[in-house]
Image (cartoon, rainbow over all chains, first blue to last red; front, side):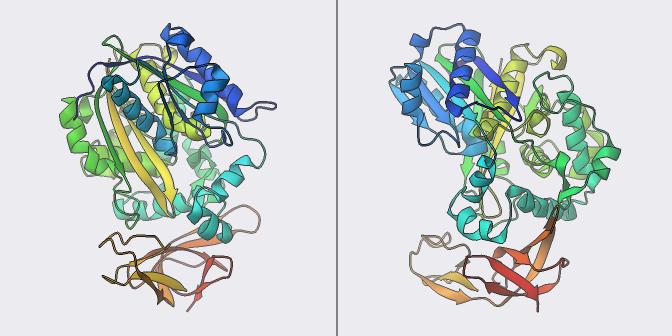
Length: 373
Length: 92
């Protein structure tokens, strides 16, 4: 059933991302996001009867422990483990719970706090395959994997480094107008091309700055707020036996746009999960933005689309699992006309994607939501 | 090194998984694999670079493989699985 009526997004929040957060904690970040979100939504904590949490660093606690920490009595509670796809996954589950009457007001929270070796430990033990087959290679995390996807995607689509640079540069441009982005200084093509490789052909500007932070979204039964016009999901779409593209979005897109009653060209704001520039291009292509010619799309169209208007994770930062909510929060902020210096005038429709959970060579998850103000 | 082949339909996978994605079978056998072709390479910097490659086997299984030194796409490699689970490739 494609109908998501009777559910409204009434608020959101982001705890400013920080590269170092001495003395911080995942729980404190979740609580901070919670407080900001209920204030933004204009509701009382007591009204929240549903909670969804995604976090890599929350264990040994889970969502139910967060409910206890926050003093919430719930009818509905879930943990989400879909990483970069967790935001839209939680949105889907929360919306359905509200439609079914299982909850009335749902708080969606994501946060991660990283210290010293936390991130290295996370990538080396991400799943069994990472622990048993990738860590022993000394792979050091997903950069090397997506460096190779980038290489093959470039060869298949006739792209140069400058095409991937275009993604990083365009997003940095937006980030310069986002006071919360961790990278806000101008980035030039010369700087990009001169930057040493991290995992060839990726340089540091192709890789997200890992930060500590949190995001939140509040949904409520009713019609007053931002609506879900369409939502699609596809997990383990190609059994991980493909190239890393097309992503699951290619299969999701036709029904997504049909249900939304609109096409890519009618989206005022686009948030694509940007763990790497190659995945930004692949997802935009899969959604139908590139008309089958990615090189031409980059040259003629990318710079004129409002993509990842916060600067995306590449410039704003990736706060672990909160990266899965970041693009959604940015789209909501834009549709609420609260984006300040980076506001897309009159934004009323947005498409947001989720991606991630690398199984050996690339991510397993793809999802997307179209929002309507 | 060993790939895993579905006994029911012969489909080959790596890493191992419980049910065959092609036929749903749950019985597997070892499928020895000695060589592959490099599809992509990268060097993780800085300091002593770690060279990794995406290698395609004859059964079109893709592996992430460590190389002792830089090599180029298209090159053939001899594959060997170390005791710690790492798959290594070298000229061959």
